[in-house]
Length: 103
Image (cartoon, rainbow, N blue to C red; front, side, top):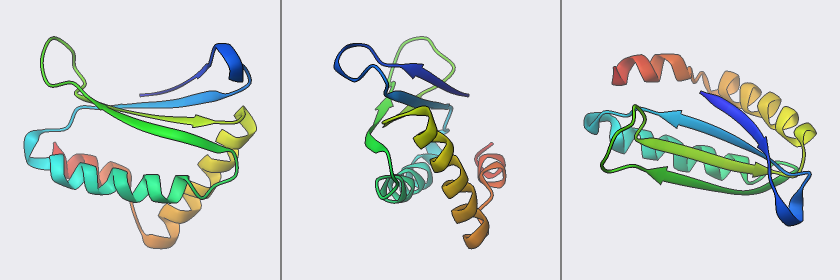
């Protein structure tokens, strides 16, 4: 699930890309390796401001991991999406296949 929400306060034009994941314990290590790789690439892109990952370890909820990336603008998000798609294609990475492997 993805969403962009304008931030409040000092950086009103900034947008956030939020992705939620339900990751089984058996796939946790693989998931975090992928996140570290993605974060390493995203931080090189124009308009990148910062990122975070949150893990829910208890309580209700369908998702146990959430990633948040802050961008300078909606245009920066659009550029990043294109860059990520091109990167995935160049390395033969298919996110849907990885999710299917995790079940």
